Image (cartoon, rainbow, N blue to C red; front, top):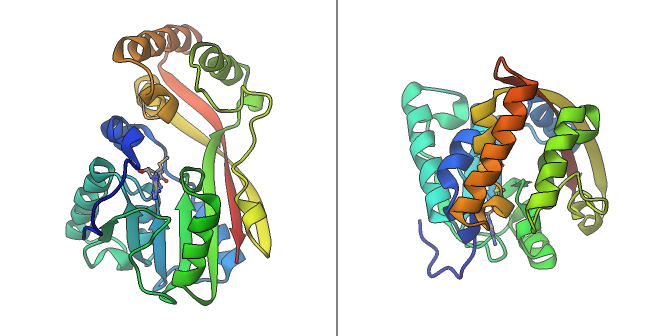
Length: 265
Ligand SMILES: C[S@@+](CC[C@H](N)C(=O)[O-])C[C@H]1O[C@@H](n2cnc3c(N)ncnc32)[C@H](O)[C@@H]1O
């Protein structure tokens, strides 16, 4: 469904949609468990609006747990991957939420082309910081049923837990002008919690086991990398590859991660 002409939204990720789709990690089970626990929403059968759904990492996790998901994103290349992957899941006969095609809406999350009071949950996975902080939450409240919840979640490198990872982030901070992450002193989680009346926050540590090339694809999918010229991005990826291979000749990384979840109304 196309909600009409979209301004230049979501364009950053258009350039790195393949790397995003292949390289980014999913969210650990504990995020979905905590989401159900904190919101009181049983994901099985719930209607969830996944705003800034991208290639569908969170959408797929929700559908596998039985949710009916309306996936909203203004980036056509990102959403195209979400649709094709969800169709494959449906064919493979996955979870209860995967027995119907995913509802994918090409739209700005600040102006949702959705009916009011329809959703049990509005989800921003790794996306709310791309939206207008006031308009987005007003829209979320409009589309929520009474008693529904809004949730934001983000996956982060837990850089202070491993020296190699802190060094990796420091190299990015030094080389990429628009880098924003744990190596920047004033870096913090997006302030979604301050937009809520009632809020509960959780930090969920987990470990990502990943091959170096896969990890470098993840690197390429970040907006600060998409902002670089191809030559500059290649150079930086090559440098990171050399350092990582020297530290981990077997080619596998154990990456300390932490997911942040904030839920409110
Ligand atoms: C970092 S990606 C997150 C994708 C996915 N939710 C995930 O968990 O990996 C951010 C997404 O927000 C989308 N986005 C940017 N501006 C937006 C807006 N105004 N409304 C909705 N989505 C937006 C981008 O197109 C992109 O797909």
